[in-house]
Image (cartoon, rainbow, N blue to C red; front, side, top):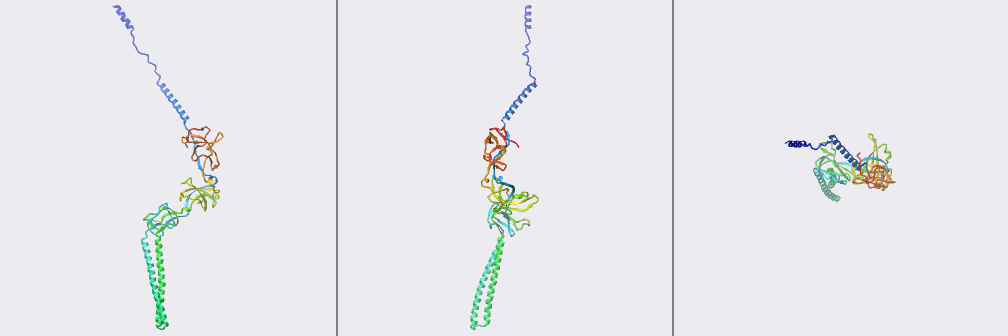
Length: 409
Protein backbone atom coordinates (compact mmCIF):
# COMPACT_ATOMS: atom_id res chain seq x y z
CA UNK A 1 0.00 0.00 0.00
CA UNK A 2 2.77 2.33 0.86
CA UNK A 3 4.46 1.48 -2.40
CA UNK A 4 1.34 2.48 -4.38
CA UNK A 5 1.13 5.83 -2.62
CA UNK A 6 4.78 6.56 -3.40
CA UNK A 7 4.23 5.67 -7.05
CA UNK A 8 1.26 8.01 -7.28
CA UNK A 9 3.19 10.88 -5.72
CA UNK A 10 6.04 10.25 -8.09
CA UNK A 11 3.64 10.42 -11.08
CA UNK A 12 2.04 13.63 -9.88
CA UNK A 13 5.39 15.27 -9.36
CA UNK A 14 6.23 14.57 -12.97
CA UNK A 15 3.17 16.40 -14.19
CA UNK A 16 3.47 20.13 -15.32
CA UNK A 17 1.25 22.70 -17.08
CA UNK A 18 2.15 23.12 -20.79
CA UNK A 19 1.82 26.88 -21.48
CA UNK A 20 3.02 26.62 -25.11
CA UNK A 21 5.92 28.48 -26.72
CA UNK A 22 6.83 31.87 -25.39
CA UNK A 23 5.11 34.68 -27.45
CA UNK A 24 7.35 36.57 -30.00
CA UNK A 25 7.94 40.20 -29.21
CA UNK A 26 6.09 42.37 -31.83
CA UNK A 27 7.56 45.50 -33.52
CA UNK A 28 5.93 48.78 -32.49
CA UNK A 29 3.23 50.12 -34.89
CA UNK A 30 4.97 53.41 -35.57
CA UNK A 31 8.04 51.61 -36.87
CA UNK A 32 5.99 49.68 -39.37
CA UNK A 33 4.39 52.89 -40.67
CA UNK A 34 7.79 54.50 -40.94
CA UNK A 35 9.10 51.58 -42.96
CA UNK A 36 6.28 51.65 -45.49
CA UNK A 37 6.34 55.44 -45.81
CA UNK A 38 10.08 55.36 -46.46
CA UNK A 39 9.62 52.65 -49.09
CA UNK A 40 6.90 54.63 -50.90
CA UNK A 41 9.00 57.80 -50.89
CA UNK A 42 11.99 55.94 -52.33
CA UNK A 43 9.86 54.39 -55.09
CA UNK A 44 8.25 57.76 -55.95
CA UNK A 45 11.62 59.50 -56.07
CA UNK A 46 12.98 56.81 -58.36
CA UNK A 47 9.94 57.08 -60.65
CA UNK A 48 10.23 60.88 -60.72
CA UNK A 49 13.91 60.66 -61.55
CA UNK A 50 13.27 58.21 -64.38
CA UNK A 51 10.34 60.24 -65.76
CA UNK A 52 12.34 63.46 -65.71
CA UNK A 53 15.23 61.75 -67.35
CA UNK A 54 12.98 60.51 -70.17
CA UNK A 55 10.70 63.63 -70.35
CA UNK A 56 10.94 65.79 -73.50
CA UNK A 57 12.82 69.05 -73.24
CA UNK A 58 10.69 72.18 -73.32
CA UNK A 59 11.84 74.36 -76.22
CA UNK A 60 10.46 77.19 -78.31
CA UNK A 61 9.54 75.98 -81.78
CA UNK A 62 9.77 78.16 -84.90
CA UNK A 63 8.51 77.53 -88.41
CA UNK A 64 10.23 78.11 -91.73
CA UNK A 65 8.36 81.00 -93.36
CA UNK A 66 7.75 81.86 -97.00
CA UNK A 67 9.28 85.34 -97.12
CA UNK A 68 9.30 87.78 -100.01
CA UNK A 69 12.52 89.56 -101.04
CA UNK A 70 10.45 92.67 -101.75
CA UNK A 71 10.64 93.50 -98.05
CA UNK A 72 14.28 94.47 -98.55
CA UNK A 73 13.31 97.34 -100.90
CA UNK A 74 10.28 98.51 -98.93
CA UNK A 75 10.60 102.06 -97.60
CA UNK A 76 7.21 102.31 -95.91
CA UNK A 77 4.27 100.08 -95.03
CA UNK A 78 0.70 101.24 -94.60
CA UNK A 79 -2.69 99.66 -94.09
CA UNK A 80 -5.87 100.57 -95.92
CA UNK A 81 -8.90 99.29 -97.76
CA UNK A 82 -9.82 98.46 -101.32
CA UNK A 83 -12.30 100.93 -102.82
CA UNK A 84 -13.79 101.45 -106.26
CA UNK A 85 -13.04 104.83 -107.80
CA UNK A 86 -16.23 104.44 -109.82
CA UNK A 87 -19.12 103.47 -107.57
CA UNK A 88 -22.79 104.40 -107.67
CA UNK A 89 -26.01 103.98 -105.73
CA UNK A 90 -28.45 103.38 -108.57
CA UNK A 91 -31.97 104.76 -108.18
CA UNK A 92 -34.86 105.81 -110.41
CA UNK A 93 -35.61 109.30 -111.66
CA UNK A 94 -39.29 108.85 -110.95
CA UNK A 95 -41.41 107.68 -108.06
CA UNK A 96 -43.21 104.36 -108.14
CA UNK A 97 -43.57 100.86 -106.76
CA UNK A 98 -40.78 98.45 -107.61
CA UNK A 99 -42.34 95.78 -109.83
CA UNK A 100 -39.31 93.75 -110.93
CA UNK A 101 -35.69 93.42 -109.80
CA UNK A 102 -33.51 91.34 -112.10
CA UNK A 103 -30.09 91.25 -110.43
CA UNK A 104 -28.43 89.65 -107.42
CA UNK A 105 -25.41 90.59 -105.34
CA UNK A 106 -22.19 89.75 -107.15
CA UNK A 107 -23.79 89.76 -110.60
CA UNK A 108 -21.94 91.52 -113.41
CA UNK A 109 -23.94 93.87 -115.60
CA UNK A 110 -23.16 95.90 -118.69
CA UNK A 111 -23.78 99.59 -119.20
CA UNK A 112 -27.40 100.18 -120.20
CA UNK A 113 -28.71 96.82 -118.98
CA UNK A 114 -32.17 97.01 -117.36
CA UNK A 115 -31.70 95.89 -113.76
CA UNK A 116 -35.10 96.87 -112.30
CA UNK A 117 -38.52 98.19 -113.31
CA UNK A 118 -41.21 100.28 -111.64
CA UNK A 119 -44.92 99.80 -112.21
CA UNK A 120 -45.53 101.55 -115.55
CA UNK A 121 -48.89 100.48 -116.98
CA UNK A 122 -50.29 104.01 -116.74
CA UNK A 123 -47.17 105.47 -118.31
CA UNK A 124 -47.26 102.84 -121.05
CA UNK A 125 -50.89 103.74 -121.84
CA UNK A 126 -50.02 107.43 -122.07
CA UNK A 127 -47.12 106.52 -124.33
CA UNK A 128 -49.41 104.57 -126.66
CA UNK A 129 -51.87 107.47 -126.73
CA UNK A 130 -49.08 109.86 -127.70
CA UNK A 131 -47.97 107.50 -130.46
CA UNK A 132 -51.54 107.40 -131.77
CA UNK A 133 -51.70 111.20 -131.76
CA UNK A 134 -48.60 111.25 -133.93
CA UNK A 135 -50.34 108.96 -136.41
CA UNK A 136 -53.44 111.19 -136.39
CA UNK A 137 -51.32 114.27 -137.04
CA UNK A 138 -49.59 112.53 -139.93
CA UNK A 139 -52.95 111.51 -141.39
CA UNK A 140 -54.16 115.10 -141.12
CA UNK A 141 -51.04 116.21 -142.92
CA UNK A 142 -51.69 113.74 -145.71
CA UNK A 143 -55.22 115.08 -146.09
CA UNK A 144 -53.95 118.64 -146.02
CA UNK A 145 -51.42 117.85 -148.75
CA UNK A 146 -54.23 116.42 -150.87
CA UNK A 147 -56.25 119.59 -150.35
CA UNK A 148 -53.17 121.63 -151.25
CA UNK A 149 -52.67 119.75 -154.49
CA UNK A 150 -56.36 120.26 -155.37
CA UNK A 151 -56.14 123.96 -154.55
CA UNK A 152 -52.96 124.28 -156.59
CA UNK A 153 -54.60 122.65 -159.64
CA UNK A 154 -57.65 124.88 -159.34
CA UNK A 155 -55.44 127.94 -159.06
CA UNK A 156 -53.46 127.00 -162.18
CA UNK A 157 -56.65 126.44 -164.16
CA UNK A 158 -58.02 129.76 -162.96
CA UNK A 159 -54.85 131.49 -164.12
CA UNK A 160 -55.17 129.97 -167.60
CA UNK A 161 -58.85 130.88 -167.84
CA UNK A 162 -58.22 134.40 -166.59
CA UNK A 163 -55.56 134.94 -169.27
CA UNK A 164 -58.13 133.87 -171.88
CA UNK A 165 -60.75 136.21 -170.31
CA UNK A 166 -63.04 133.27 -169.62
CA UNK A 167 -63.44 134.08 -165.89
CA UNK A 168 -63.62 137.21 -163.89
CA UNK A 169 -60.72 138.41 -161.79
CA UNK A 170 -62.66 137.71 -158.61
CA UNK A 171 -62.77 134.00 -159.43
CA UNK A 172 -59.01 134.03 -159.83
CA UNK A 173 -58.65 135.75 -156.49
CA UNK A 174 -60.82 133.13 -154.84
CA UNK A 175 -58.71 130.29 -156.27
CA UNK A 176 -55.53 132.01 -155.15
CA UNK A 177 -56.87 132.52 -151.62
CA UNK A 178 -57.86 128.87 -151.41
CA UNK A 179 -54.37 127.84 -152.52
CA UNK A 180 -52.65 130.07 -149.97
CA UNK A 181 -54.96 128.80 -147.22
CA UNK A 182 -54.12 125.20 -148.11
CA UNK A 183 -50.41 126.01 -147.89
CA UNK A 184 -50.92 127.59 -144.46
CA UNK A 185 -52.84 124.55 -143.29
CA UNK A 186 -49.90 122.35 -144.30
CA UNK A 187 -47.57 124.40 -142.12
CA UNK A 188 -50.04 124.10 -139.23
CA UNK A 189 -50.35 120.35 -139.70
CA UNK A 190 -46.57 119.96 -139.76
CA UNK A 191 -46.36 121.91 -136.53
CA UNK A 192 -49.03 119.65 -135.03
CA UNK A 193 -46.95 116.63 -136.02
CA UNK A 194 -43.93 118.18 -134.31
CA UNK A 195 -46.01 118.75 -131.16
CA UNK A 196 -47.33 115.18 -131.23
CA UNK A 197 -43.84 113.81 -131.72
CA UNK A 198 -42.54 115.92 -128.83
CA UNK A 199 -45.35 114.61 -126.63
CA UNK A 200 -44.47 111.09 -127.72
CA UNK A 201 -40.82 111.63 -126.83
CA UNK A 202 -41.87 112.97 -123.43
CA UNK A 203 -43.88 109.81 -122.78
CA UNK A 204 -40.90 107.76 -123.96
CA UNK A 205 -38.76 109.54 -121.38
CA UNK A 206 -41.39 109.01 -118.69
CA UNK A 207 -41.60 105.33 -119.60
CA UNK A 208 -37.82 104.98 -119.67
CA UNK A 209 -37.62 106.51 -116.21
CA UNK A 210 -39.56 103.54 -114.90
CA UNK A 211 -36.75 101.30 -116.20
CA UNK A 212 -33.67 101.40 -113.98
CA UNK A 213 -30.53 100.80 -116.03
CA UNK A 214 -26.90 100.12 -115.13
CA UNK A 215 -24.99 103.42 -115.47
CA UNK A 216 -21.75 101.60 -116.31
CA UNK A 217 -20.31 98.13 -116.67
CA UNK A 218 -19.57 96.67 -113.27
CA UNK A 219 -20.70 94.41 -110.44
CA UNK A 220 -23.73 94.66 -108.19
CA UNK A 221 -22.48 94.95 -104.61
CA UNK A 222 -25.68 95.29 -102.58
CA UNK A 223 -29.44 95.39 -103.04
CA UNK A 224 -31.21 98.18 -101.17
CA UNK A 225 -34.80 97.53 -102.24
CA UNK A 226 -37.17 94.63 -102.78
CA UNK A 227 -40.11 94.09 -105.08
CA UNK A 228 -43.07 96.03 -103.71
CA UNK A 229 -41.05 98.86 -102.16
CA UNK A 230 -41.86 102.46 -103.05
CA UNK A 231 -38.83 103.93 -104.81
CA UNK A 232 -38.22 107.67 -105.00
CA UNK A 233 -35.30 109.75 -106.26
CA UNK A 234 -34.90 110.98 -102.67
CA UNK A 235 -35.81 108.67 -99.79
CA UNK A 236 -36.81 111.39 -97.34
CA UNK A 237 -40.39 110.17 -97.10
CA UNK A 238 -41.22 107.45 -94.59
CA UNK A 239 -41.60 103.97 -96.05
CA UNK A 240 -39.65 104.78 -99.20
CA UNK A 241 -36.20 103.92 -100.44
CA UNK A 242 -33.82 105.79 -102.71
CA UNK A 243 -31.16 103.48 -104.10
CA UNK A 244 -32.23 100.16 -105.57
CA UNK A 245 -28.75 98.66 -105.86
CA UNK A 246 -25.17 99.73 -105.26
CA UNK A 247 -22.66 98.79 -107.93
CA UNK A 248 -19.00 99.38 -108.66
CA UNK A 249 -16.73 99.32 -111.67
CA UNK A 250 -14.26 96.56 -110.78
CA UNK A 251 -11.75 97.95 -113.27
CA UNK A 252 -11.29 101.04 -111.10
CA UNK A 253 -10.39 99.30 -107.84
CA UNK A 254 -7.64 100.95 -105.80
CA UNK A 255 -6.29 100.95 -102.27
CA UNK A 256 -6.75 103.94 -100.01
CA UNK A 257 -4.02 103.99 -97.36
CA UNK A 258 -3.44 106.45 -94.52
CA UNK A 259 0.16 107.67 -94.37
CA UNK A 260 1.40 109.81 -91.50
CA UNK A 261 2.43 113.30 -92.45
CA UNK A 262 5.89 112.59 -91.02
CA UNK A 263 6.38 109.85 -93.64
CA UNK A 264 4.61 111.40 -96.62
CA UNK A 265 7.94 112.66 -98.00
CA UNK A 266 8.79 109.03 -98.82
CA UNK A 267 5.83 108.79 -101.20
CA UNK A 268 5.76 110.12 -104.78
CA UNK A 269 3.25 109.89 -107.61
CA UNK A 270 4.02 106.88 -109.81
CA UNK A 271 6.02 105.11 -107.09
CA UNK A 272 5.98 101.31 -107.26
CA UNK A 273 4.07 99.47 -104.56
CA UNK A 274 3.14 95.93 -103.59
CA UNK A 275 -0.36 95.18 -102.30
CA UNK A 276 -1.15 92.26 -99.98
CA UNK A 277 -4.73 91.40 -99.06
CA UNK A 278 -5.57 90.14 -95.59
CA UNK A 279 -8.08 87.73 -97.13
CA UNK A 280 -5.40 86.16 -99.35
CA UNK A 281 -2.01 86.41 -97.60
CA UNK A 282 -0.21 84.58 -100.41
CA UNK A 283 -1.55 86.94 -103.07
CA UNK A 284 0.70 89.93 -103.76
CA UNK A 285 -0.19 92.32 -106.55
CA UNK A 286 1.82 95.13 -108.08
CA UNK A 287 0.50 98.63 -107.59
CA UNK A 288 1.40 102.23 -108.29
CA UNK A 289 0.77 105.44 -106.39
CA UNK A 290 -1.88 107.29 -108.39
CA UNK A 291 -2.87 110.20 -106.13
CA UNK A 292 -1.99 111.89 -102.86
CA UNK A 293 -5.05 113.67 -101.54
CA UNK A 294 -3.87 117.16 -100.51
CA UNK A 295 -5.84 117.20 -97.27
CA UNK A 296 -4.51 116.32 -93.82
CA UNK A 297 -6.71 114.51 -91.33
CA UNK A 298 -6.06 116.64 -88.25
CA UNK A 299 -7.38 114.03 -85.84
CA UNK A 300 -4.91 111.39 -87.07
CA UNK A 301 -2.22 113.58 -88.67
CA UNK A 302 -2.38 111.48 -91.84
CA UNK A 303 -2.84 111.98 -95.56
CA UNK A 304 -4.81 109.71 -97.86
CA UNK A 305 -2.71 107.98 -100.53
CA UNK A 306 -4.42 106.13 -103.37
CA UNK A 307 -2.66 103.18 -104.98
CA UNK A 308 -4.06 101.73 -108.19
CA UNK A 309 -3.73 98.06 -109.10
CA UNK A 310 -1.23 97.42 -111.88
CA UNK A 311 -2.14 93.73 -111.66
CA UNK A 312 -5.73 92.59 -111.21
CA UNK A 313 -7.31 89.54 -109.68
CA UNK A 314 -10.96 88.53 -109.75
CA UNK A 315 -10.87 87.76 -106.03
CA UNK A 316 -10.21 91.38 -105.07
CA UNK A 317 -13.40 93.02 -103.82
CA UNK A 318 -14.28 96.47 -102.50
CA UNK A 319 -13.82 97.10 -98.75
CA UNK A 320 -11.22 94.33 -98.34
CA UNK A 321 -8.40 95.13 -95.91
CA UNK A 322 -5.03 95.54 -97.58
CA UNK A 323 -1.43 96.19 -96.65
CA UNK A 324 0.60 98.34 -99.00
CA UNK A 325 4.39 98.29 -99.18
CA UNK A 326 5.80 101.38 -100.87
CA UNK A 327 8.99 100.36 -102.68
CA UNK A 328 12.18 102.22 -103.45
CA UNK A 329 12.24 100.70 -106.94
CA UNK A 330 10.33 98.32 -109.17
CA UNK A 331 10.66 94.62 -108.37
CA UNK A 332 12.38 92.08 -110.56
CA UNK A 333 10.71 88.79 -111.44
CA UNK A 334 12.81 86.81 -108.94
CA UNK A 335 12.11 89.28 -106.14
CA UNK A 336 8.42 88.56 -106.46
CA UNK A 337 8.86 84.85 -105.74
CA UNK A 338 8.68 83.69 -102.10
CA UNK A 339 11.77 82.10 -100.52
CA UNK A 340 12.23 79.99 -97.38
CA UNK A 341 13.56 81.98 -94.44
CA UNK A 342 14.15 81.67 -90.70
CA UNK A 343 15.10 83.84 -87.78
CA UNK A 344 18.87 83.97 -87.42
CA UNK A 345 18.86 82.67 -83.82
CA UNK A 346 17.46 79.31 -84.95
CA UNK A 347 20.73 78.59 -86.79
CA UNK A 348 23.71 77.47 -84.68
CA UNK A 349 27.24 76.24 -85.33
CA UNK A 350 28.00 72.55 -84.78
CA UNK A 351 31.32 71.10 -85.88
CA UNK A 352 31.92 74.10 -88.13
CA UNK A 353 28.56 73.75 -89.89
CA UNK A 354 25.43 75.87 -89.87
CA UNK A 355 22.73 73.57 -88.53
CA UNK A 356 19.17 73.68 -87.30
CA UNK A 357 17.32 71.15 -85.20
CA UNK A 358 14.31 70.02 -87.22
CA UNK A 359 11.33 68.78 -85.18
CA UNK A 360 9.53 65.83 -86.81
CA UNK A 361 5.93 64.72 -86.33
CA UNK A 362 6.95 62.65 -83.27
CA UNK A 363 8.54 65.74 -81.66
CA UNK A 364 12.01 64.27 -82.08
CA UNK A 365 14.76 66.60 -83.24
CA UNK A 366 17.16 65.91 -86.05
CA UNK A 367 20.27 67.96 -86.52
CA UNK A 368 20.21 69.21 -90.11
CA UNK A 369 22.87 71.16 -91.97
CA UNK A 370 21.52 74.18 -93.86
CA UNK A 371 22.81 76.58 -96.45
CA UNK A 372 22.36 80.15 -95.23
CA UNK A 373 21.58 82.80 -97.84
CA UNK A 374 20.99 86.54 -97.92
CA UNK A 375 18.85 88.40 -95.44
CA UNK A 376 15.19 88.93 -96.21
CA UNK A 377 14.06 91.66 -93.87
CA UNK A 378 14.55 90.30 -90.33
CA UNK A 379 15.01 86.74 -91.62
CA UNK A 380 17.71 84.83 -93.49
CA UNK A 381 17.23 82.50 -96.43
CA UNK A 382 17.62 78.75 -95.85
CA UNK A 383 17.23 75.66 -98.02
CA UNK A 384 14.32 74.17 -96.09
CA UNK A 385 10.72 73.77 -97.13
CA UNK A 386 8.26 76.37 -95.82
CA UNK A 387 6.34 75.06 -92.84
CA UNK A 388 9.23 72.98 -91.48
CA UNK A 389 9.35 73.13 -87.67
CA UNK A 390 12.69 73.85 -86.02
CA UNK A 391 13.92 74.57 -82.51
CA UNK A 392 14.30 78.27 -81.90
CA UNK A 393 17.59 79.20 -80.20
CA UNK A 394 18.75 75.62 -79.44
CA UNK A 395 21.09 75.25 -76.47
CA UNK A 396 24.40 73.40 -76.29
CA UNK A 397 22.82 70.48 -74.40
CA UNK A 398 20.26 69.76 -77.14
CA UNK A 399 21.36 66.57 -78.86
CA UNK A 400 20.39 64.89 -82.08
CA UNK A 401 17.44 62.54 -81.54
CA UNK A 402 16.19 64.21 -78.35
CA UNK A 403 12.49 64.51 -77.72
CA UNK A 404 11.15 68.02 -77.26
CA UNK A 405 7.90 69.72 -76.43
CA UNK A 406 6.73 73.23 -77.17
CA UNK A 407 7.39 75.49 -74.23
CA UNK A 408 4.38 77.17 -72.69
CA UNK A 409 4.35 80.90 -73.19
